[in-house]
Image 1 (cartoon, rainbow, N blue to C red):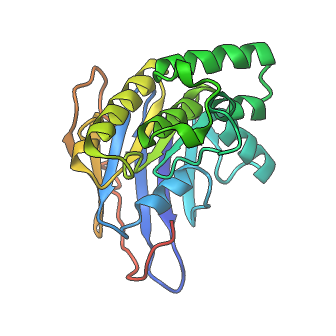
Image 2: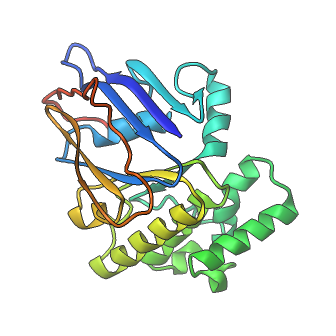
Length: 250
């Protein structure tokens, strides 16, 4: 379970980017965070990803405060083991084969060669790329590259998956296929997941939609069908956000 408590981020001397954000996400839940450009979505996601520190507050996953209560070395190890990332820019290494790219998280986590081979084959089959095992990334289409990225994000069976505009570089038909695949694989792995997007269409593939505005982080609607309860935003201490007028660094 992901829990965010009283999270805030400031860039002095500007007003706080956001503050008092409370958020809970259970295993198997998949939600979208939307908002206008520059509203701070990427900063929020980077904090959840432990790529950027909060100004205050806590981010815990299964009871571990991996943002403020552990060392940098332990934080990196925790991120490698428990988090998976899907980005708009695929970040596939061009000098590795498809299978070698997918295997990177397993290598970093010290998985045995036999187990690594098994999991990579399973994930490539799951994303429909079994025949591309030895292919160079340069021979793949944009949709295939994102399938590789999804396989890499989930091959180590993370607890939390974070997707930042994963279909931003894709045509509408390919984007729809990637969104369906991402949703199916998150469910198959029983991960909790956050999708940051500008696209209403993409957001409706999740179970719940949240929106960042100048006045808060609010739930706007239940999105796609789900057998799970939607994620919860605390009503006792509503999220309050105020945004600086300068451009927000991702």
